[in-house]
Image 1 (cartoon, rainbow, N blue to C red):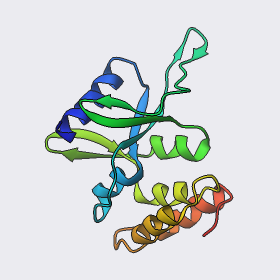
Image 2 (cartoon, rainbow, N blue to C red; image 1 turned 45 degrees about the vertical axis):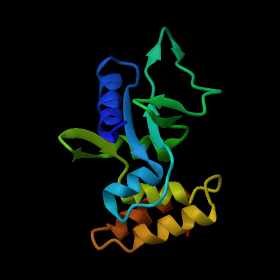
Image 3 (cartoon, helix red, strand yellow; image 1 turned 180 degrees about the vertical axis):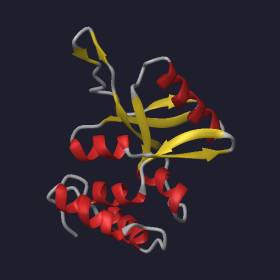
Image 4 (cartoon, rainbow, N blue to C red; image 1 turned 60 degrees about the vertical axis):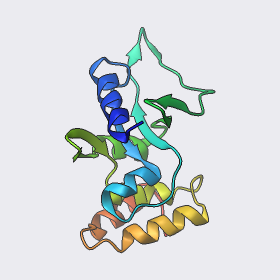
Length: 149
């Protein structure tokens, strides 16, 4: 179950209109920016297409296996998550283009009141140490969305 096959499947879902846009989030996104952290699944923020005036719904779906990898599709529930998906970086993983939430947005997502856990605070602290981090952008995102450290 190579990770790259799951990424190819995400790109196929986008190309076929199953999802409008996506970005890898959570612990797996950190792998692209910093030292890997343990995780057992792939979190994917998604923007879903409108179909017949009704939004496609994913309620009740915890994880599905995509090419053998437990994957959780998380509809972008608020303006911060939608921004994180829209501004995602496109990176190459073993020859496959993949969209990944930028570290500045990962930090902001970790500081949302519903997401604040000790584990996420640790991950945010690790990301804040990145030499390439745009700290001014982090501050601007947090301010714009009413979040703080």
